[in-house]
Image (tube, rainbow, N blue to C red; front, side, top):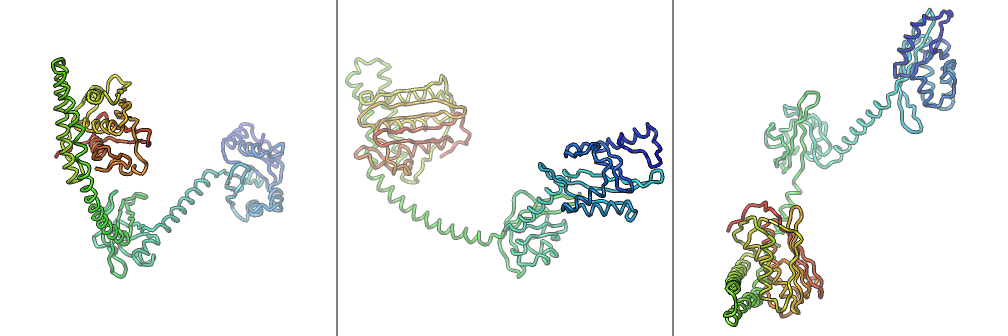
Length: 510
């Protein structure tokens, strides 16, 4: 039993005693009852548990100890709050003060803790009794500390950011401002909060300015000078009251820099275009004729096969030779058209129409057309692990892109060898690779791989206009795809196309 007998040695009724003790034990607050001499004569379960948790070496959890003596001993040991507690406790016991309350820290080795001590007295059978309670407020204190730290951090941010931050009442009156606002508008802070936001800008304050997108407005400083500013306004509700927060950025230096950059960019673009036009003219004149030889040679070969072996060829073979002639004539016409177009505007402008197509059959037909014409000098390997690949693409444009890549692989593998054509798919793209074992591309040419009419420095007398990769890239870009190239001099080149299985862009018209 933790609650004591009274001083007259009259025992409480057992049911009353049990009820009072149960009520006290149900409280989370640590409670001790002391008499007028300061002796602890009763404690509740929370006090007992606290004593156990903090390794208090006392058989009755402090009952019988003198609270005054404990405080005096703690004060001698340097406890900062012990003397205050002693005086407050003594004041309540003697009746000099009706009650005493104090917050104090009581940190353990593993955590920081705070308590509120409350002391009040009552009379029982004409004897003074004092209730001493210790309420653990550690969570509350930690929350308060976090809130205070957050407020201090927010204030530090507001005080140090370069942009003006104002809180504004619904009638436009400025409620608060940060130092940047005073600096930008050239007012003292205490003066600025007496003004209306309409004193600082050339348009009336209204709620239409509220929104995620800010506005470029004209600001007005204290000397009436005007300046460009970015103005962002948002509504906030605190305690059911509406106010607004404005963030303002002075755009004066930005506008000046923007004007200077624009002027420099205009000069740079003009000079760059002049250089490009000169280079384009030189490359077109020196290279165009060589690129025409490839389709002409293919036409000549099909013609010779028909002429020499036409009487022994099957109808299908004859049709295949004739189809190849038509195909190469069309390719020649397209190539000339591309040269003329690139020569004028350095870009490909043409119709773009996609349709779902069996990509495996499509690519195999392209490769087989090259096998017919180059079987004597090069071997072709077609590899595709997938059984079906259906992609949405422009048949005419993709054929031109693949023809460019395979043609380059043949052209820059003058000693023959095997051209590897690989095709596979992942979740979103069809992947096409053309790999050769030719002369490769020097590293110094990497920055110009997809520049029209640029040719690698090691091509020597090999024919070509330098249009193949440039046109191929533009075609793949139209399909919202990608192209990468890996090459090593003397080893070969690998070009990879990333072709979306479904095109998500709008068609481009002439």
